[in-house]
Image 1 (cartoon, one colour):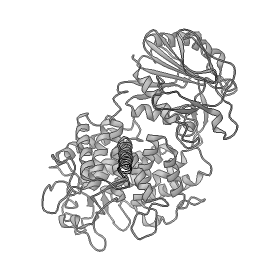
Image 2 (cartoon, rainbow, N blue to C red; image 1 turned 60 degrees about the horizontal axis):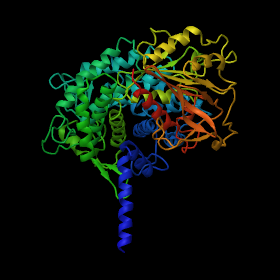
Image 3 (tube, rainbow, N blue to C red; image 1 turned 135 degrees about the vertical axis):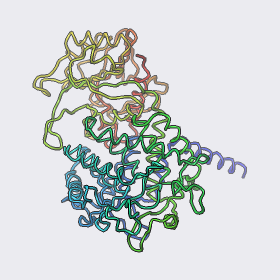
Image 4 (tube, rainbow, N blue to C red; image 1 turned 90 degrees about the vertical axis):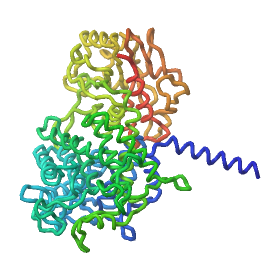
Length: 636
């Protein structure tokens, strides 16, 4: 009996230890999926339908996918969204004529799916086009502000900024509608003009241009109270829209200024003891008021992301960390089976309608408080992701990682039929790109850029890591840029001065080896004229390479997938760091103050890091992160 009790104790202790090591973003996503295995049901007792809460969870799960490289999260989104989007792009249960901004945010998942390499994806663009059509025809105030819904005439709600604008911004960027960024900026400008309180810096839930609603102040049109979740929607909208807003757009600075204006007001009303925020933002311990989960999570997300992206001073991360610690203490509950729950999310908050919601203090406190409400779960995952990034992004701060766009210089038609550079570029979201790896570098705190011309002392001056991948052959590019003597000299000098150089060749049929090897020879490295790890179809095991424990670079990776690669021949100062079946797969050379990493394949592109194609036993995502950390640790 004692033995059984002891074994049970060990089992429970082991489960607890694993849970502690698993990030909260992953644990909450897994807990959510375990409760919504077949579909995302938003309204209790009603069939699943197209809804903003569903879209919020899609984006949260997408963030976990991007953070982990585990394709099961992508597949979950794909499977659930497939229940709505028909072959012709129509959306089951969506009603265009409602002109309801709450129907827009799920469109962000449509854009994600359309931008991936997969069959039959045109239906996702058609569905996104339908939502775009709604935005183009959305009823507007006299000053061109979107009505929140057709049945709420003349009203702008803070909720609507999050519902519509991140989708609008991404759609405008992807499908080349630069003129629409003015409309996006206009929505924020109108809220700033009419809904911001001059005394507190906080924002009222809504305003009625007509001043006809009973909840509207007859002079200002504003609703009477500050509701944390409404302000949270607005704050999240700002930091998400800025992901897509053009750097040179004249209104971009204003959006950043709005966030900088709001941030100190949020911190002012953060509870000093618990670190979280109240349901009614400014009312503190007034009778009936309570700590509320969704608004608290939204504020932490906006503050932490604002700091990470450089919109807010570093001091605001302290408030975000305090808020997140409070969230874990006040709202997160571990269930008996190890899943997580989130408590104290208010179910809804609105104005007008039937029965009529008058916007009073008593009204906001009358709405039910729910456990595992999606409006809390989604922002909790958002906030967790940001705090997990913040815990490790000091490594790359102040460093720049550049990919060569000169020796590798291939083009294709983009989503709009225009010519674009692709293949191992940071921007390419398809299987051919380096978007996943670029995200890893940026989340470690580094800046990513491209070297679009021949390398010189000037364009390499502020670069810490320089990645050259798969130089073009004449088969790939009509006039390829071969590595020249001047290029070798410039790169060699840069490495000796402390740069970290990455050389990624390819199999002999798809890479210009002759001149690339002249550069590699400077560091004691040669890509051999033969191919190994040839893979037939989906016999993935033919591309498996095991990484022994204690590898100096890949400290968290056990096995990777690299197919059809060129092995290496090394001489001093180069040394092998990974061998396979008698061949050198990866070599490293220390030259002067710098470092050179070489491998005979571009094996860290999206197809083999996003977890969608190869089995998860092959840890290419983990390897990409391990290598990024190692490269950023190199001194320069």
